[in-house]
Image (tube, rainbow, N blue to C red):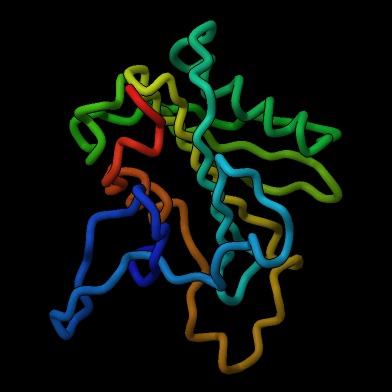
Length: 188
């Protein structure tokens, strides 16, 4: 699960969790940021599951004040599809997140979770969480990429014990995300 891993070493990170031993553990360990493998913009961090081809993208985007509510979530999903040059973009569900359940409830005006598919080379399932932070003029977008099972990295016998991530894991990550340093947004 995402709880077994360490997410970001910067100002954003999930709440600290503990292993069964009671020792503190960072909540999300991955193959690591992909910045070593490909260029990643300054406003983005990309992480991969250690075994599968699943990935998590965390982006700080300019607040798109011209769209509100569910349309804001759809806007960002379609924008990602355009950037990826997707041949097809299909939204399956869009649901509001209850602000009281978010660790970022103090600075988040609205929050949405969207699930859909985009066809780039093959169809890929994407789950996106949009947290709107108007006092920072920022839309925080988290994208969980789930490639088709046949596209996942080789599952050698030693990797069978490492479970792939689930939508529940992603939702838990989204609700536990906290802001450690508001200076990430520049002077306020």
